[in-house]
Length: 141
Image (cartoon, helix red, strand yellow):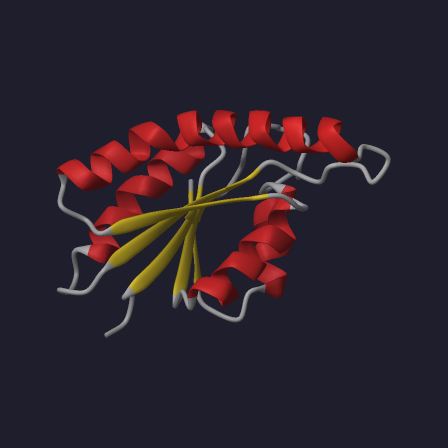
């Protein structure tokens, strides 16, 4: 069954919210569609260690949980099976890593994120995912 496990990176942008709609539709194409919501809060500099690092990870994770709460509630309301992954690391590479770890067969993501500086035609994270992913990538604009 194609589109059985769909990775949906979310950053809070309008484009990622639009991608949510497409992920829902793909998940509903069959009986086994599952959406993996994910957010990467970026790389934490190696200089930050110990308790300060742990506190920063807790804060970033809490912010990510808030960001993903609304999309997750919508998926639950629509009866779409889902799970959440909150990770650190450079967002583009994190998307590809989570896709591999979760066994996703497609990625649905927005063409641009929160920053308009990422690329002229599409965001730099999306561009990187398109080049690194081993599965189909649906780019939503």
